[in-house]
Image (cartoon, rainbow, N blue to C red):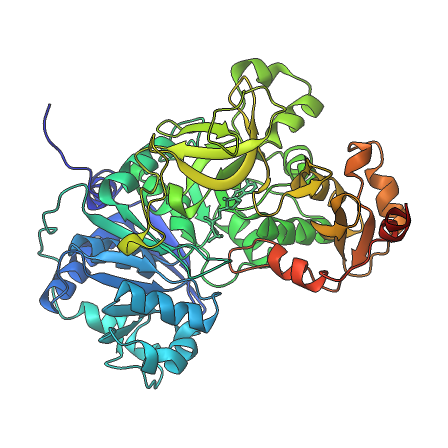
Length: 544
Ligand code: ADP
């Protein structure tokens, strides 16, 4: 067979040739909706690649983006990689010190920035020693006065060349993209995707058991391109030439709802907190969905109550997804096996609440502390380890040393169960597991049930020190605006739904549960806040 390197710009060539007029729609930061198509995106990406090459961007040079999802952001990725460079996504929700660390560590030569984020970079630029040029993702008419070094509007930059450019020749194993994990502890670490890993991952996710995309789909990636490679949608959608709709900066329930209806979206992907806002908006205004068929939900556990609402109230299929930056990022997706499609909904809901089955190319097992494989029996918990062509083999510049075991498996840092059918269920991050009397309690299970209480907006469960049991669960709750519930109400709601010894020893109410840069509950912060919390059960136990 021929040696046809798996390069991401071949995906764009394909979309431009076979879906030339299929649209890409963007809710612009400047306000109005913009419309373009795959042929134009292709031409403009080629133009950008030519400009970057003329400006001295060489293969493997890193060019960063600090931007919302837009057609210009998409062109930037393809233009950068087409010049042989590496797109490096910066997450604007990170702390300024983390951004400085990441840009310097990556040695970014240019940063493409949205209007919204100019103030962040103006404050930091004195510390960003490798950045030579800032490109503002707008046109001359909207270009603000800025102190950013060599600042130029994106549309002006494109005027520096035409589209007559041959993509730079590369090996499929050459670097393509760079994304840092948010690093809840220690410095963020870079995951460097190759062209090959991005293409293989996108092909794997396209199957009907994955995102199941076709040219007839209209895809709304709400998951930002600055987080975890946008769950591959920037590559998998153009592989089919689907229509794409880029939401820009507005991710609130009303804005998302309007896009879903106005653009007739059929598939979308986002973290649970985004879907929560949409569901609340639709419930408050008695709205329905007319075209949406499937949503992928992941990044943190999707509560069963959310799956049920989508499927029963709105007729939308939920694909619960699990993955991580180190896995390109999707590892498992919750499509049902043939035999389970005949089950009553209540039984299916139990399965769909698990994190799904591995995509092709993801090998997966659970192990004990010594690395020995544990049974796939649906009840044993263990460390979830993975291997595959789209799984990281180490961090950028070797940070963190060797991250693989002797057989080449990467420890995800998650604790999970696998069942005989291959469904995987995350029970916790390994650092969040609650260890009570030598046994493990899954915080995610309790949270999933608690959030089903009508008054609860967000629920978090952490382990708090206990004199007898080492740790016991504390349920921390953020109520919905205007809603009311007591500690007793919530405990009663949990009763019978979880094992007795998993019942939280106490409930604490907070104004806002802290949520991090990628939509995850910040357990570290909660553990700090509640470090001295004395459980009502602690006194009696200490006296025993
Ligand atoms: P970060 O947000 O830390 O930069 P990732 O987005 O890569 O990094 O986060 C990956 C982690 O998110 C996983 O290891 C897992 O703990 C958690 N996660 C992702 N999807 C799910 C899910 N569906 N259910 C539970 N946890 C999830």
